[in-house]
Length: 179
Image 1 (cartoon, helix red, strand yellow):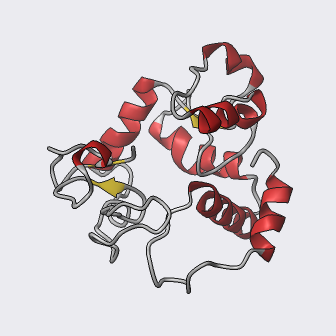
Image 2 (cartoon, helix red, strand yellow):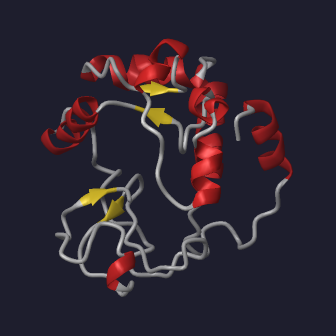
């Protein structure tokens, strides 16, 4: 995951487990690399540069990075979670590499500004928060019924066990974000 070229090559030769579009099956690394490579090939720009120019700078998100720069390493906060995932994601190579689906480092202030932009329309959220066709279906990778939008998980009633509802048991159907 910390090598862009190896990740893209692996995806190019991979075979899907299900027919495209047949079922929801979230994979945070694969989708990020696919979209990132699409951006790179269409724009000719490295993904971090495109992200900075098209989203981060217009929103004033100066402390948000796709691939943590070395001079910001001292401010990183280790990720918590299950031991194998935690160990993999807390490697310096994972923090500093361009991993579009899992490698954004930011501050609480920048994150709040980004979500405020989604709420007030500064960031176009038309597709990102509109419920998709996977409404209530069990995601084949997460093995939970997840309400998905194009860019976020959605809150509201879910058939998932209370302890595993991504945005919480009492979340509003208008809530969006990511666990």
